[in-house]
Length: 445
Image (cartoon, rainbow, N blue to C red; front, side, top):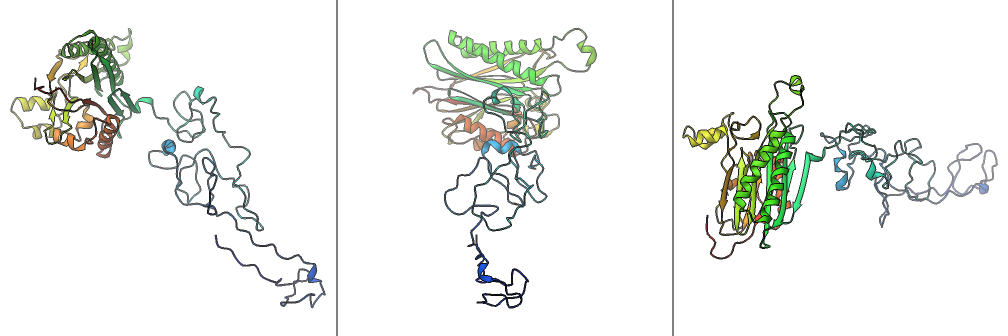
């Protein structure tokens, strides 16, 4: 910070305000002894309002807000949820400020400029905050607002300090199990996440590894679709985890898992007496399902509905493939030769499903298929919230990072990010299941 030079002499008499000349020892008007006036203090630099002198600085955490600043403030990654959907600060800012404010504010009750030059001092904090930051020893027992980092969250999911609605746990879920990973995100348009998934790894009777992934998409036109997807994904995952270590063939285990998942969703329709009277037009809970198992060089997929599985080889010179066929109006039009695929999926009826899990499904027809890839790669198990933005196998392979098999969680984040960047009109869920290189001589099944 630049410094202003001090004058060598007083400009006027301290007693009568008569102008003085350089070298005067007494006032010519009143005779005041100018030698008794103490010399002006030497100039001392003060801390800039938006910075500090060069050198190591022990920054407070977080830094107190600077009054009058119009520069955006930097925050830790954990503080990012502190902005609302428009990026506006959740505390009331100064009129010109644009940065996000958290649990500390500048004390505006004191003058912002000192009345006389002072020594540099460490930034001070007010004696009290309007609402103290939580004690970390009690934070585990009371949820703290993700926005202001200070207020407690009430039973309705809103901060008692700033009023910010808290994200629900299933708005964004990430999970890893051994080599498999999955992510589910609410998307940008839906008010809740109606997808769910299950990922796990286990061992076959001979000790060889097996990995599985189940992805379910709740049918939005049905009642409680989020409960349906949760019941189906957890039930199917549990059945596969129990059947594979017993030596059940993966394709038989897949069929058994889908049937059990359908029964779990059917059970949600068993409502108490009188419940239907209050909502007579609601459909039974329903969802789609798609799942994969990788075990002993075998790739098995199973599905009901329009959620999909894709195969993308690590060697991108080999073609990727879609492993499932949709239970949908569009797929039926294509199969009947009435439309080509581009025409069918451009129709507004394209995503009307013809198969699902639920008490009002016409007939349960689990589809299963078994493959023996001749090279390493990954299986992508996803809902239409992703494949709407990468429909063909080639488009999906283009979005998938080349190191997906080595970093499946990272790959899942990239895929979900692609869907969100493209509009995020639906819930987005994807599981990334690596398929290891098979023994020499393996062929197609």
